[in-house]
Image 1 (cartoon, helix red, strand yellow):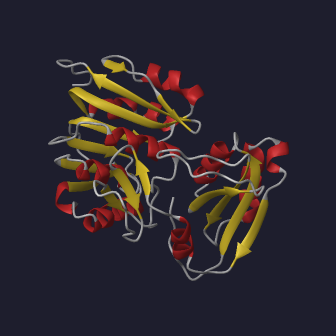
Image 2 (cartoon, one colour):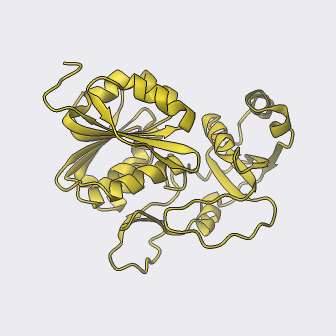
Length: 306
């Protein structure tokens, strides 16, 4: 999640929870239109350097969210209170903070991250020691998707291990365009990003230009996008939205093609698989920090929705 610098105060929420609850609180803040969500140590707990691809959390994790200055604080407090158990939401802190360079402050905490063996996401063109690195340059901007959230990390790791050379890829719900851009840098021939948010489409185009792939990436509003097929379709959205959009998403997958679904909690995985049954054959799920990625292949020679 990222944010836009504006000359107005901001609303900031803080909630300290057990690390098992942190992903759900993070998701709640995002669903309430938080502009950024960060997780930090609430108990001065030492943490060793994580292995590549790991995103460890502290036992007591402080989840902080930044909201636009015109957010209704009473409504925000009420929505959080209704969504969380009383003992969890009781520690909610809400403050109004003056404008500052939030983007730069966020960059100070954001360092290059590796996903899989070759793929890196880096802000500000920071140096990467790995001579074989394939780097996606991405700073906070106007849309969700920097690789810090486990759902995005799962997709990036999957892409790093996939055979993408010469393929066309559709990123449905593209956010910042990070998955489409990563696919192109890993060898895909063409990518199409689709999103309902105009800010996401703007961010996708700007990030594509920054990474030198703008000539191979199309960005479409979901309402204007004409149905096209691709051998790989990515959809990093929430489970309920995936289920609702199942017919449209499946129709984008070419016969014999692959579908990657993320944004799913472990207890939601069976429901999502059931919704996407039919000609799709699912493989084993991948899990990271309380989130699941599902991979399926569409049987060749079958056309479900034609």
